[in-house]
Image 1 (cartoon, rainbow, N blue to C red):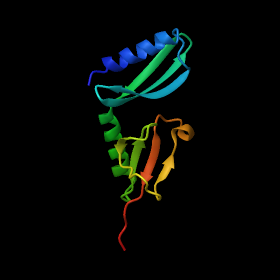
Image 2: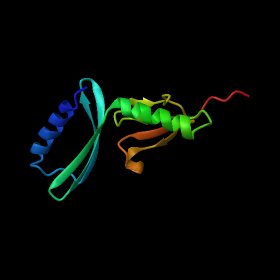
Image 3: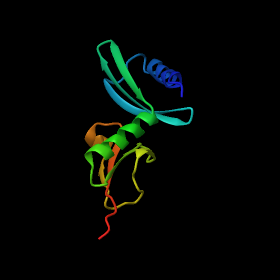
Length: 119
């Protein structure tokens, strides 16, 4: 998945904003059918951006779930439009713990899904 497609989208948006991006930002850019997470920070005349492909998000959520959640609970990352980007998040799970992007400052909603425990 060429990140050049993501760069092209961001470049067009940067020019549309007359070279004045918001100081901090986060969003999803769809490139070749895959959602790429982009986060950026502008300091003075310079802007630095990080593009995170889905494979990196999947690896990260798997590692977090496997190494820090030895209970069997699972972490999921949900995009602003509601679709699952990585990990596990069962739709309509009333027992899931959700931390919206607006509260965490991250580009996704974090969802911790409880493991099904048998008695």
